[in-house]
Amino acid sequence: MIRGFMNDAGRLKAAEDVTGLIDKVVWIDLVEPTGAEEQELETLLAVDIPTKEEMEEIEISSRLYNENGAAVMTAILPSRADGDDPDMHPVSFVLAGERLITVRYHEPRAFQTFPARAEKVPMGCETGEGVLLALLEAIVDRLADILERAGRDVAAISRDVFQQKGAKPTKSQDFQKVLETIGRKGDLTSNIRDSLVTLERLVSFLAQGAVERKSGKGVRERIKTLARDIRSIADHAGFLSQKITFLLDATLGMINIEQNAIIKIFSVAAVVFLPPTLIASIYGMNFAHMPELKWVLGYPFAIGLMVLSAILPYLFFKRRGWL
Image (cartoon, rainbow, N blue to C red):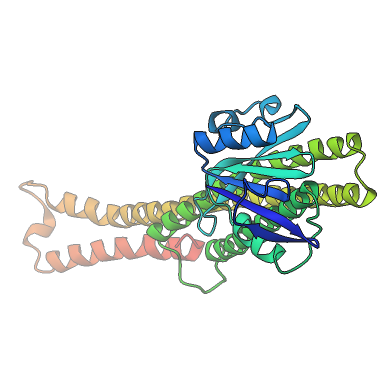
């Protein structure tokens, strides 16, 4: 599918016939383009549009390069990021003269919200470079929102792990759910950090190209601000990653404490019942001459002795604070 947008006093206006208005279009958005659509645009614009296989290359030289006067930049962006398992796929930005071409095979949220907002509010979309900057700003804002939501979820996990004094102890199955949640938040944060790394490289490449193109001072300032925002969000993502690692270690420590408490209970029970077992074993021996066998109070004496031998270790452990 091919979507096109024209400049309308700094706003974006959707073009119904992209190929017919190709000279007026400042942004062409290719969504899962077919081979025929790519070939048609390459013929009209004399620009080599990267294929899906080329977009998925991991080498920096394959993601950031200049070709035939066009700057080709590829970044990894998330879609369906309202949950903890976003789709991470590459999106290519081709800046060819006064026109921006985007190629994508998924639906990041910014590509839905940005055109709708740019149709209502002037965002400096007179040229393809202006559209690119405004679009990147919307993408960075979206990544910041995702990290903000992840931060709130991590704070909630922290409250679950470190319960206040007097709260009901967390059960083992609850700890398992906490570990699963921590793992999902860790994957989400890692994906966002990967996306920010690709965006940071893209903006650096764009800044270098802006100098070569002798872009205006306002454009260069927007690029610098965008780079600072990306670094700031990347630092926040690193902080969240460290906090998630800390929560993972803390949760595993809590599980070990709970398991040790259970083992301690069994150990104490074994020690408490050891003396009664010894006494019962002694009086269970089949010797012919045992003074207590014919004693009327022999049975109550043995029972009382076993109870006393169980109570004394219990009181000792209680006094030492081991229970």
